[in-house]
Image (cartoon, rainbow, N blue to C red; front, side):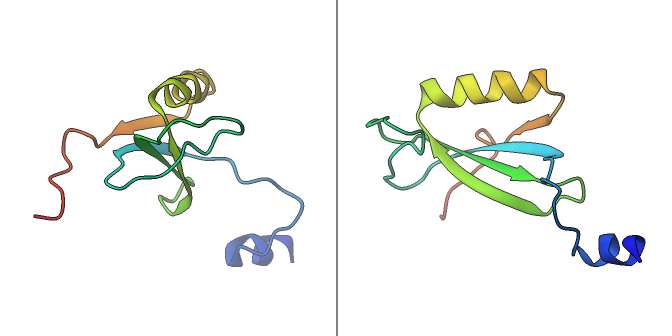
Length: 90
């Protein structure tokens, strides 16, 4: 029964552990999502599960993104940097 619930994504009581993190340049104006920060967000940190499915997107200023990236790298999360490959909408 537990295996069937895992296969369908119905497992409760477990926090999702990110398998990867992708750094993306922010193309619009948004505040940093860190509590108390009044700076503009410059980067999106997109977390994905082990299957590559997006879990969350958060906008961070450069200072808070550096702290978050260092913490995630130390935790063993794969980090992909898409800032240099993004061409924009045109």
